Image 1 (cartoon, rainbow, N blue to C red):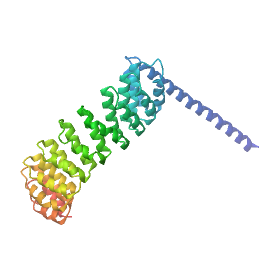
Image 2 (image 1 turned 90 degrees about the vertical axis):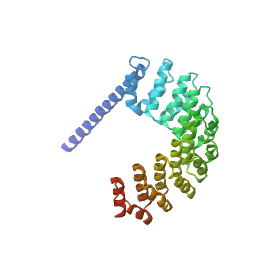
Image 3 (image 1 turned 120 degrees about the vertical axis):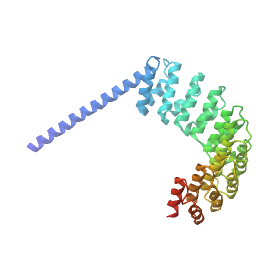
Length: 338
């Protein structure tokens, strides 16, 4: 009988405790719900909008449904909508993708600008189709944000639309389209990119070299060779770096030639790129660079020889075991003692 009474009391206490915990959870949820809604309302008030934005970003994913709903409320001002869209971009949760795609259709150009930018921060490939459409927007900022967002999203499905932008009169549009094509490693762009080595804008030419290196196909080598042998040091350096990512004999020959440049920066990046290729045939070139007049070139040559790691590379490093530069001596000593 006593055991039965104890059991009944225990069940009663458990049930009561569950009700208390449930009530507490409900209270916490209700308070958070009210807090988020209040912050969203304050986005309409310029005096408190900044603090409200900070708090909503801090709430993170839990605030996304409230923010998305607020975009459809009739009393949400245009400026508040832009703040909400920016917040959704900062939270970076893909639950906001659908509502931001809808905002790309807004008649308010500032709303479209904000949405096209926020989608890039979220990086949801579901937005690719809508962003491709935004590339045709009448507003240049929307178009620019769209191509940047496609670059951030890195969806191969956007390749065709990105290729069409390579002829755009705005160099920034061309540059981000090239960057995006490189990130998705789209080999179909090699021919078009190879024709852009003489683009009038230097940032476009640099990005061509980067993207060809990202695609890293042997077909990229001729265009990179042209850039590497060009008159502009920054472009030559980028082309050499990219060639170091394309492992073939043609890359080796071009970089070996660049290693004899009168420009120390070109010799430096050539030494690094030869190590990236990893060919034993690069050892004689790197051995010469161990005696370069520039300290950084000599260090890079030693590092690359150690990276190649062959017997010939070891013999080359033996010649600098007593080098005046401590970094060169240390690299040589560590590798030779292996």
